[in-house]
Amino acid sequence: SKEVTPPPSGARDPKDMNHTKGGLVIFTANSHPSSRELGKRIAERLGVELGKVQVYQEANRETRVQIQESVRGKDVFVIQTVSKDVNTTIMEMLIMVYACRTSCARSITGVLPYFPYSKQCKMRKRGSIVSKLIASMMCKAGLTHLITMDLHQKEIQGFFNIPVDNLRASPFLLQYIQEEIPDYRNAVIVAKSPASAKRAQSFAERLRLGIAVIHGEAQDAESDQVDGRHSPPTVSRTHGAFHQGPFLLMPKEKPPITVVGDVGGRIAIIVDDIIDDVDSFVAAAETLKERGAYKIFVMATHGILSSEAPRFIEESAIDEVVVTNTIPHELQKLQCPKIKTVDISMILSEAIRRIHNGESMSYLFRNIGVDD
Image 1 (cartoon, rainbow, N blue to C red):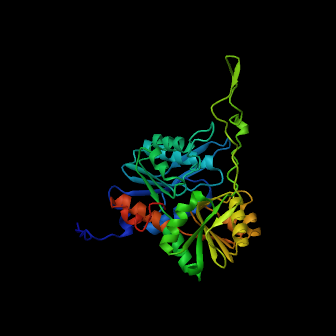
Image 2 (cartoon, rainbow, N blue to C red):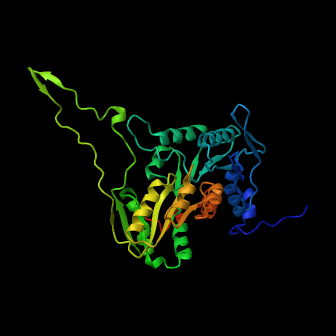
Image 3 (cartoon, rainbow, N blue to C red):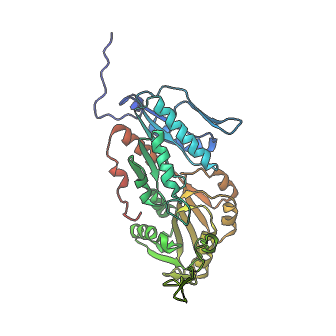
């Protein structure tokens, strides 16, 4: 038989990825066609075929997953983008991961560019920290590694007892600013609330631009009356006298809207991590227009843009909304031509390649600030 000379050890042909270290399989765990687009792009960049799998909803709305190829001893990467039905998305992911685990996959890495329920990562009133619950469910299903992007709070990584790589989209958004906004040198980076000031500062430092912060906008309505916390302390009778609690809580007063920083005659670039309910962005744009900004951009990693968001953007003072393709939003783009997309499949495919080949991930975090 003819001897085949092996390729040089340094050669890194993407076509060979299927045959290294037991093999790599990439699945998209989504039954929604538009949500599979990112998976196709990643597989294309890596030069591998998408794994054969059937994910569908039965007539009774139960999720059914059928893996149609062997995953025994292989590195499995499950790519899941969040569709409109977020709860189905989570179930599809969990069932797919569990199916791979019971089929003896060597490792199962979840690629969730947008981590669902990430806004529910703090204790509010009598609610619960849902992010922790989702993390526990994923670990229990058999996930061994998670790749995600721009978590709403970095502390969510601590909810997992597996390695988490929280990639950043900011280099792609910064590149967009430098290449697509001709006079970006005359721009100012705006935080629409003090909460996002650190992100704005991180962008401003790397672009060597000024920063402005909008302060005093209407915060999320957290009415204290609804759960009884607004009720006064109980009055106790002691020695015939009435005693009230040691202090009385004053109701929160919202200060009038002020803009800290000069935006007059400038391009205003509002930066945030998620754009979903656009009311606060539209209000911020109105405020900036009143203060003399002549062009307003909104930059965010995750464009959820639910319900009437595209219409509100179209009718607002915002000139352009730039989001990445962590969440499919083709429908919203048809409704609102102001929405532009930045492709981040390159960093996700590179992360998959490095994890599969056991290479360092630190290269993907260069030029990333602490507050990014």
